[in-house]
Length: 78
Picture 1 (cartoon, rainbow, N blue to C red):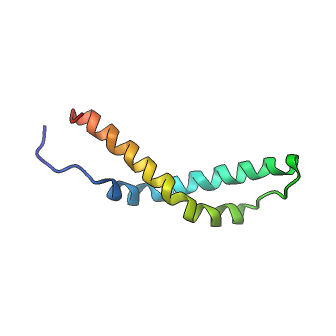
Picture 2 (cartoon, rainbow, N blue to C red; picture 1 turned 120 degrees about the horizontal axis):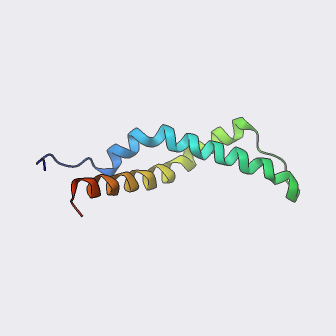
């Protein structure tokens, strides 16, 4: 075991934000393709990207916490 301090969640979140926001954008766009079935207008790819910027923040935080927990388990800290 090393004595190095573990990465805090906020640092992991900064690194993971592009990936989490991209996943949010893809999921929003695909969900938007289903909207016409229930009577709404579909979501354009640009709108999905715009909405993914703020909605990516909580998704990134959750992803950062998950990765931090996995890193702690791998290092035997929990």
